[in-house]
Length: 345
Image 1 (tube, rainbow, N blue to C red):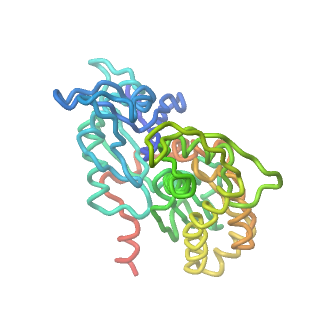
Image 2: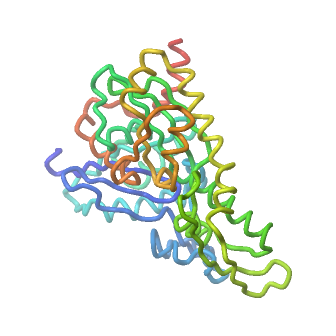
C-alpha cells in the first residue's frame, strides 16, 4: 500500500501551512488564509492568492485566517483549506489510497482541540491522522540527535504560539506553550504606531516593520523605515518614519513572557537534563525566532548558548516529514502528552 500512498507531514501553522511529501520534501508552502464567497460559501482562493485579498475584498467576499493561536478557530474553513492543499500536495487518482497524515500541534493543546485537528484532516481527505508536538517535530527538523538520553531544549517561536520543550529519548520530558509569538510582536508595533504617531497600519505593514527594523536586543547601528497608513483623526493617508530604537523599546517588553517561560521550563527540568542543555545549548526554531537579537536575549537571560536552526521556519515541517519513517509505530488519535504526564505522576 505504501508504494502507492503519499504520506504527508503537515505543519499546520497560524500563519503558514507547510506540507512535506514522503520521498519528495516540502512541496506546499502557503499562507493559512482562505477567501470565501459569503453568499454561496464557495472558496474563491487559498494561500498566497487569498492573503493578497486581506482587507481588499468586496462586500460578498471575506478573506480570513481559519487558525488562531496555533489552533483551529473556524472548522469548516480549515477543512476546505486543507482539502485544497492536500490535493496540491498529493496528486491522487482513483487508484491512489487517501494519504496518512502526521500533523503538528502546540504543546499546550487540549484534547478537544486535538480532536478538532484530527476531524478536520479526516474530512479534508486524510485516511489516518497522527499528531506530533511542535517542539518535538522542530527538534527532529533541526537535526538534533534525540535518540540518546542527553537532553536538548527547543524554543519554537511561531506566529500564534511559542513552544518551549526539553527533549530526550525521542520524546518530550517537559513542555510548555504560551500564546505570545510573531502575531503579538506585529500587534505591539501596530498599537505603538497608532498611539505614538496617530496613524493606523495593518498587520501586514506591522510585520514588514518587524522584519526590516525590529529587534529584541539593541542593534549596533540605527535603522529606519517609512510606512504608509491612515491618519486616525482625519482618515487621510499619511507616511510615518520609524526608527529601530523605538521599535526595540516596544518589542523588548513583548518578548519578556517568552524569556520568563524559558526560565520557568528550565526551573522544572531535572539537574541532569539542565546540565546536558548547558552543554548542548538551546535551539531556536520557527519564524519568530528569526527576529533580530532573539538568540542574544535568551542567551543573556539563561546563561546558555542559543543557536538559530538552519531554515528555522521549516523545521517543524521537516520534523513531521522525518516522523513519517516510523508512522507504522505511531498512535492514532489525541496525544495530549501533558495530560498523560500528569496522570503518570
